[in-house]
Structure formats: structure tokens, C-alpha cells
Length: 296
Image (tube, rainbow, N blue to C red; front, side, top):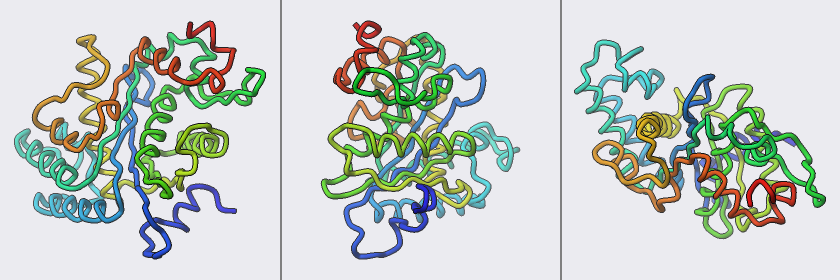
């Protein structure tokens, strides 16, 4: 039986099989998984296969107009005018960012992003962090596994997965493509499998495959990279201003990047209070008696 990443290549949703119906593809990237990061953000875009094909064509066209090879695109380099973009003016950088953001805004490609304040994440108890990063509970309230309480990435990872699944049509599947290297991809694959096989929520039957393609060959993953990098910077700014919560619709580039946002809860920045409030919303039979006192 192939593992998730292999299965994602074997049963790729673009293989043209007429039996493959009603699928969503979600391309997800991250920022803030390095040591010392103030915030951690997971996000990207999801949409139907046909819409992605149109979007990718426009994305490649925009890069071509600015003579940027597909393999050379990195959002951080573009924004900071480093790497391939060394020597570019701020104006030219912004023009390309706008052109690329327009490629996602023009089609039914929907943004999704969840972020947490790293310091606030570590203010939670170890058990809370284990629970938020994927540890599952036995009926007696003890943990089956350890979760990953020292890696904030896996706290926003779960709501991104679940919100995308909620948009998959009844009878359809959502396939996920992540821009992750080892060791994060190994645990992401394990957690995805746990959510798929042991989770309890209304969209359980909508899990598709998971894969880890190379961004230099995947325009949709580059679109996720641009979205995440720009709103990661915005989250840092908001953190400095101590203003978090459901993200207000900003202006200009971020407004364009989030043009197709379907619900305010699709893009959320969480501090300690909101993380605890999120856990309170999970039925007690799923979070266990072990967390009752912490969340009271």
C-alpha cells in the first residue's frame, strides 16, 4: 500500500480519469517554523481542478512577462529584492506581486490561513499543546500518542485541513499539497493520517491524498508561498500592535490576495485567548476530561 505522498502521485487528481469527480486541490505553505519566530502561519489556496489550471496558466504568463523563470520564484526573494530579484526596484517587485495576486483573484481559488503567536502557544500547558498538535485521546482521557507540543506549526495545520474539508462537495474529496521538507513533512503525513483515520467531525469522508511537490515546479504552491509570506508579514505587524483575531479586510495587495475569501474564519490569527476559546468549542468527548480543568 503506497504511503500518502506516493498515493498522491499515483492517484493524482489531474490524471484525466473520468471517474474522479468533485475534487478540491489545496496548496499549502508556511512561515515562522524557524527557531526564534514570533508567529507561525500555515496557509494557501484551494479550488477546483479546472480553476487551478486556468490560474496556473495566468501565473506562468505573469512570470514570463517579467522574464522570471518558474524555478526561480520565491516570494521572500521577490518581496525583499534578493536572490534572483537582486537589483529589482521596489516598484517592479510590487508590480509583479500584484500581477501574481491577480492570477488567483481572477478565478475561483480561495485563500485559507491560520496563524498562532508562538509565545502564546507555549503559554499553554503541555497537555493543551499536545492536543492542539494532533495527540489523540483514549476513552479514559489519556493520550494515545505524544502530539508535537514543541512545534507550533501543527496547531494551525489542523484547522487549515478541516476548513478545506468543509468546502469539499458531498461525495467529493480534498487533496492536499504541502511545501514542506523533512522532518516536518514526515510528521505532517503522520498527523494527516491520524486525522483521516481517527478524527471525528462531519467531513471525515472527504479526506483525499497528501503530497509534497517541489515549489519550483508547482505554480499553485508558489501562489501559496506568496500569500503566506505577505500575510505573515502582516501578522508580525499586527502582533507588534497587539491587535489580533479574525483578520479585518486590509487594503491593496493583501485585499487582492484575499479577494475570494469565503468566510472570515478562513483567515484567523490566534493569541492565547483565542486558542483556548477554539479548544472550548471542541466537544468534550473529543478533547477528553483531561483538559476540562485547563479549559474551564
